[in-house]
Image (cartoon, rainbow, N blue to C red; front, side):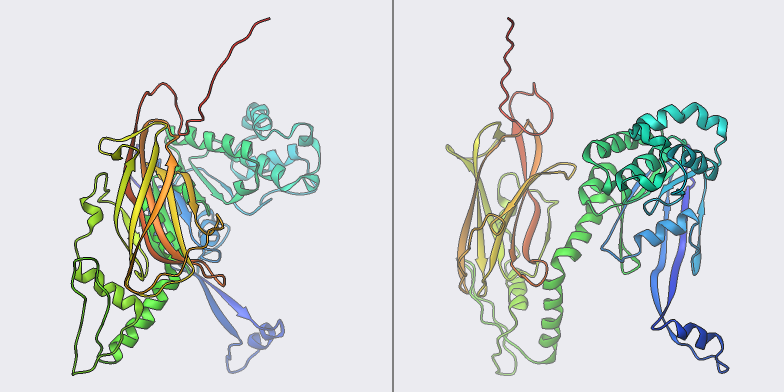
Length: 463
């Protein structure tokens, strides 16, 4: 297989002119002095990447980040304002719902219409038509006008036509989100078949788990720019940090500016057995911001007790504004600390130690179990369970106990824990989130398969 990229984008940019009123277009057109009556919205800016043959690339990002614009430029339905893109190989795309379909035509007629647009002969579609209809699963509606279709039927037929055109490159823009679960599973099985056949897939999604499970690389777009590009887990972590940690980051930035404006000192409580942090300047004692104080506590106590514990994962990912610090944990069962692994069906207690350098209220504690490839097995937090956590005082230490029965098939899993602050006006504020903090091997008989142990019993009765 050639190593040359099948999709290559270089310095792509896309601008849109925004007019406040329709008349402004005319005024600008006939302006003698060349006066402009528009503002410019940049949907894409300096986007550069290559996609190799056989790669599956997931594109994630918030709404309005330029994901759909990027795919439209790759497909050739939209021209870039700057830069260029090259595509090598037959391309099939599912962009906006119903794109390429004539609502007055029947489903059958639209299959042949789409095939013609993809450069497939009528004879080839004749050979594949039964397979397309079977995959779409719309039955007799294939001969009904597309205008009578539901959004799910639209997607079924469009996807079936696209994947059965034997494309070398498949592009999907969130279209599968409107399909039912059974059809989505069928689509992802076809994705896997295409991957094994060395086909290239690009798709936009808001599901980080789909990117983790199905993609060889990820792209995180924000405000029209690539913020992260590479291995899916790292890209997802960058995306989640921006998505859930942005408030804390903004606070820390503004507090850092305050810190730079004057001479300051800190009086902060210490972890047990450690000395308090102080910075004295010009005889003045000024209380520093909470986030900066916590930051300096961490700097003063570089040793993390978590790293000395059994099953610690040195490749954990951590972020937050650090107004509280997870500094220790213990994984145990009824007999004491777990040393070898967690027994299938065993009751497990995870005790997490936390230090609060400052007063903290509206606290949320969270817990997640994930597979090695990043799929969430279970997740919960105190807010969703209706548990009110009392306010923590400055200098206080606390412990959180997570108790659960390990109803998992033997294998390798990761435990994540975190502290956040409830903010009803926006997303939760990340304080100290430690993703994949603990490696949890589950041991026991391997006769079953899957992830969850549902304590199945099987009986067979004959008359």
